[in-house]
Length: 289
Image 1 (cartoon, helix red, strand yellow):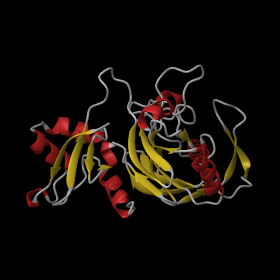
Image 2 (cartoon, rainbow, N blue to C red; image 1 turned 180 degrees about the vertical axis):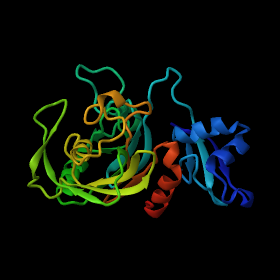
Image 3 (tube, rainbow, N blue to C red; image 1 turned 30 degrees about the vertical axis):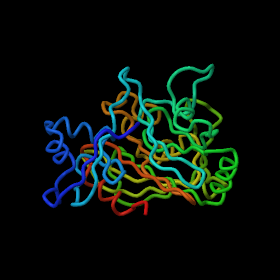
C-alpha cells in the first residue's frame, strides 16, 4: 500500500484521540474515522495506532489507501531490517499459499512486495489470527532466523482476550503434540525445549474476559491457543479450543502485536474497541526504538 495523505499535527491536537483528529482533518463523522483507525489505516509517525490513541503535537498522521476494490484482504509492510521484513496480516487471510496455488495469502503477496528479492516466510499465523508475519529477504536470512530462534533471540508478543478472570501471570510449559493436524494436544509433561513456553500476563479485565499478553520465543502450531485453553482460559472466539457455540461475533481475539530480533523490531495494534486505552498504554511502554 502507499500513503495517500499525511498531516503534521499542531499544538491544538495535543492530547486528542486519533479518531477525533482524523474526523477533523478529513471532514469525516467520528464513526467513519474510528473505522479507519480500527482497520489499521491510520499511521502515527509510521506506526498504526488504534482509535483511542492520544496524539501529540509534532507527530505525523498518515492515511494509507483503502483495501483493493474487489474486497480482498491486504498485506502491509510494517518494517524491514537485518535481512527480514515484518508484514501485517489481517484476520481471515491465510499465511501460506494454498496447495495447488491460487487464492490470497501472505505468501502470494511476497513477489509483489519484494520483487526480485527471493523473500520467504519464516513464521506463520493461523488464518483467523491477525498481526505480524515475518519474512526473510533471502535464503541466508532464512537460515539465520532458525539460529536466532533456537538461541532465544526472537521475542514474539501476542495480545489475546481470554475467557474468565485471570489475576496473576502464568508460565505454561506443557508439551504440545502436533501429530493431529486440525487440533493439537497438550500433553501432561513439560516440553523438553525450554524455549517452547508461553508466558502470560493479565492486562485488564472486561465482562467475563481478560485481556492478556502472551509472550513466546519459539512457537509450535496452535501453542498459545492450546496452552491457554488447557489452563482454563480459552481465547474468545476460538471454536477449536473453546466453546464451539461461541465462535466469534468479533472473530478470534488473538493478535501478534510485536516482534523483535537482531536488526528488526515491529509493532501493530488490533482494533479491539473495548481495550483500546490499555493496548495504547502497552504499546507506549514497549516501543520499537
